[in-house]
Image (cartoon, rainbow, N blue to C red; front, top):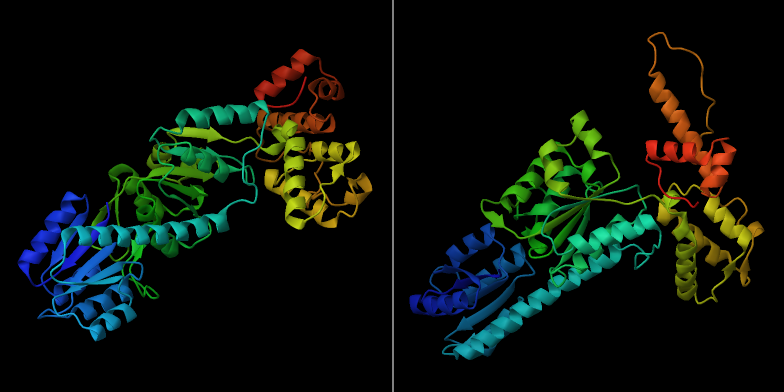
Length: 459
């Protein structure tokens, strides 16, 4: 609900405007003079301020200057019974949206207010769009025909219109933000804001200010009132990336927003009600973090209402040719080059690579391929030495028994899972060939895959 402040020393004018605007669905606050209005502006962020020009305590120009100092995005409409060209010019020079002379027609005021608020909305949406474009991954759509990704798509389709919170888990580079966007834009909230923030990118004080907003003077550098992202996302969705990196203090505040649907700005004294769907993401094992005491158990269960697990690229290698072709076309178009083709040998290298950076690593690899491409075909020698390898070489398993003993079953399971994955990678994820490499029959090999929850591959 948009918030409007009415400032006028005439009670009848305050009452007429207040009744009209409340009926139109706005949240209205009234002040009878400039001093009271300036005090209100210090406590609250308004979408629109309607102020008389001449008042006994504090003029409309003083109110206008206070608004623009505290919240520059707030739209100000000036009204007066003593109009002059000089006062109009002065008001417009200090940032007033429009200037009305009393008496005026109600229809005229309603139209100007609608246009003023629409300008405010467009300004906010433009800011959000620029932010989204800056944050957005360079691939614009989700690509995947593998069984694992089809399951993810199925879940997205089923839960998009649900109001419940979503927790997306997966390694870095698997496309968690793309899934979050898909959920939002398939939902009934799609026409409202989708706001993103990386919780690991900011220290705690700045993160709190970004999420919940702040009031002018609440800390060093707070030179104006600022709406937080929860407030900006009202009616829409907020994507909290790397939620596992938040501090206990921030987790407490997030829990309150989820439970009470309200929060308080930094330095503020009023609670703000919001209707926001929270979509969180992490590359951490939050259950382990809960057990270690670094993540609140109650917050975890509040977020994990609808869990979505994104598979790493190494477990959906059937999607690699599709992704590679998509990135070839994308980067060729951006650079103005013809789309090159990959030889079968290069494709085999792509299928065999571990892709620890997942889709993002593949994307960067193909961008480099296009940048260096000079012909119509990319061969193995063209990408020689381009694949990233682990910094440390794997160490042979030790048969020494520590003085305090060891978890034998855990060690054996770890070795078994490691060898299963290595066999699958060497066999290009063809299960029959991988089983032969380990001298196992098909039934025994499948049993071990299920035991270690290893999914993907081809028969």
